[in-house]
Length: 107
Image (tube, rainbow, N blue to C red; front, side, top):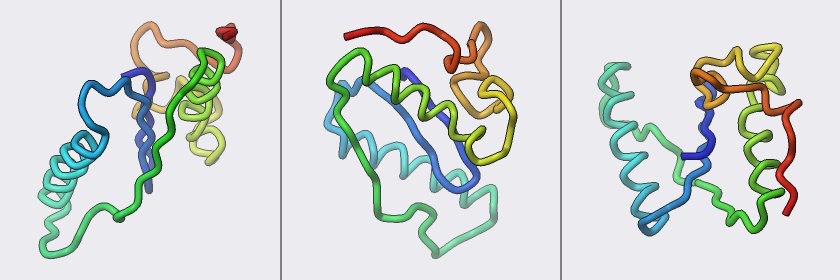
């Protein structure tokens, strides 16, 4: 997984799939919905919306742009001041950096 962020009302993940995307989406949504509903004590109601949006990354430059977009989501939403402050993000990982000021890979 290249980048991820868990927001209060949605999630973004940037992966390099080794299986069909529909299979990956079904597995992720199925497992996370079951666990979230257990934690919340909910039954009989769907957890996820039926929608999902996917996009093929075509260049290294576009890859870095998408990583920045994903990791900046909590900043844009006003939840934190810096991407590295949001603990439910790949930017929070040990050794992670604030990619906003890092170099951009040209492609």
